[in-house]
Length: 146
Image (cartoon, rainbow, N blue to C red; front, side, top):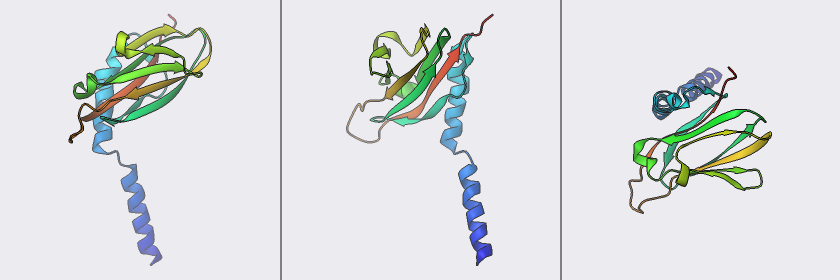
């Protein structure tokens, strides 16, 4: 009985470790469609990529260092792009960037070390299923000192 339990547990752990098709698809989207938009900037650590559906919203926290030039990109697949909305706020919820008027990427120099919030949402365009869904990536790059 113990032997069967160990096999079942090992199988579950193995299956959880395998990347799902959607995760692999979103990783490919990030690497082929979003990373080239960094240009001369280099990825500053991890980036966030996931499948997002109409009506969903995510909140990401980032720490920025004083005196560093940053590029933040929030991009999704074309099927969601028209509805994608994101704002960047400081810790006191003051809006410092809104993509409605300025686009999917933001270049800036951090004047102080601070934590920011990136709120990404895709409003519903209709109440009838199927809801649109697709990959979305939030990536932060830093400009190297040359």
